[in-house]
Length: 374
Length: 248
Image 1 (tube, each protein chain N blue to C red):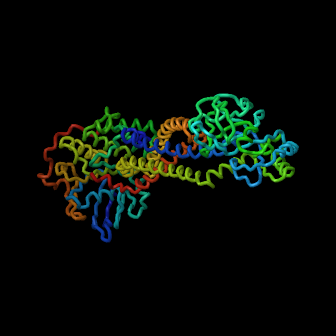
Image 2 (spheres, rainbow over the protein chains, first blue to last red; image 1 turned 90 degrees about the vertical axis):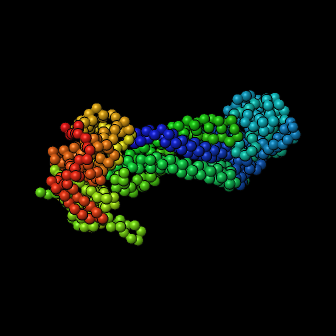
């Protein structure tokens, strides 16, 4: 087949630029909206997903990680006695108040961990060490929230829940879905910051022994420890994400924005592809008059749409990568996992081909006799 | 002798709201292989509609149209393209070349529609352009060609499908007299030396000398048919230049 589709596309540079701009705009819009959705979704369960635990033990009726209810830390010893448990640690995740130097108050989420254990630790440290949390009153927070919490450097002292707190390190990219940043500290400090009694914890994390059956261990925990619930890490992550994204309505808003991004993107692409097809409507009429079957005309239009999609996707991804990277320094992360980048290719192809189908409908109704009209 | 196109009692009505416009009324007409037939008449008389129906582009409202011996009235619309491709070549007033394809590629497009392989299509496109005197213009784009050259590319394209019937709509209207004459000489050769049935719609009285038969259409019906030897001398050649190009 003579390269009609390619030539039609590249012949008019201005039209090509307009078409590609429309597709690139749509790709970036969808990536940003879906990326925000994924960013928010990931942020809701950051703490759970980064733990090395297999199971999370909570009090009864705890809907999500930030809503932990205190129970006796003595249950830790009962947990460790259950067959198949390789390791178990108590942790605290709880909202409390941070007092800035200027007297202002900020809400933070204290995360109290066993510093000697690896079931839950701060990650992506850019300054300080996790072991520094062993020193009294020490805390580690994310550099994203320095300004919000009034922190400028390691060594500064603040007040959390009425207790002294000293910054010993910073992480990078540990976002919280809420406006309350995570502040990591030792379990003992966290009990103070969160105003818990010395014998209380909020969660117990469990690592199952190699070869042990996860569901059997879980059932063993429920049988041996009273008044608790036990979730797999995946379940608890899903519960927390579901709560924030759908029960609060926050996620629904982001999801609607993502869907709107798709719709607007499709409309923009449809409009530009349609206009491109209409520019060549007389040529398609000539093709039909010459005896080309509809399938031949489809092929030309589809090829044009597919080429537009590939180029538009490539350019759109380049712009998107810059946008995604730029968002890392902000409070709302835009995430683009590789699977999303791959899926976007097919979404773009689908949008362009779908848009071409709309214009094909118009082309198929061309009266071939139009070729006789001067 | 069987007519390449045989039209009998042809009517065509265009639907326009609650009323219809009768464009053709009871037309009887044959076009034979080896004959150059011209359709003349005022604007709106129905000659282009007749040409469109003869070329299987429009469907008739009633009557009979046989193209290469096959009845086309009553065929489904999706059956018509194959019939056009097989039997009919078109030459348009506005050339209707694909501006983004070179002259050679425009010809190849028709060959591709006919299922000719790429290499063979390229060879054949070169041959056809040679035949219309455009041997060196394979890679030239329509924008770089004169009106006469464009029309010759269009003729080469029409010939690429090796059709028995060539239908041309005002093929000289956009050309000067000299170029128009060249184009008409090609049309004449197609009919008289290559045995094609050539039907030309024209307003251009300068080209009437090339006709074997002139059919005048008025108000959707044939008003008069004039055989070549009876064409009034006053209607023949008005200022057309000498021939310079013919089909090789």
